[in-house]
Length: 122
Image 1 (cartoon, one colour):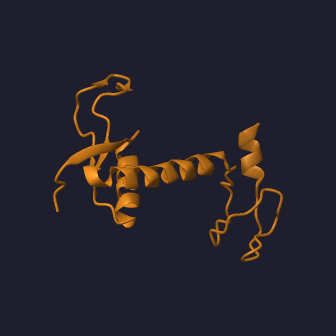
Image 2: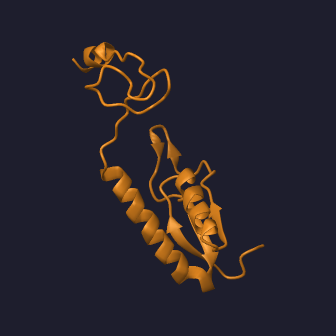
Image 3: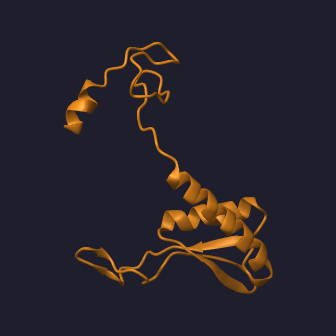
């Protein structure tokens, strides 16, 4: 269904983020529409110029307050995810996330070899 009185409630950094916010709102029961940046205006040899055709998320005016509360929650979760340290190490056999200081995967028992990682770090 088309929005009757659309209002932009979120300026996203990327098209993907705009779609994520739209899905978050739709899952919360708020009809939302994402407008993606698909234009070539604002591009130059070194990438995109900021603030030109930003991807946006739109909702009906009657849902702005409700959407705003969900967007605040989305941004809070995004900041929390960024502040948590990431463990990018995993067992190549089973895919289980593992600590660097272990020599066997706690899930499948596969021997883990971190020698390539330490050589790359030097």
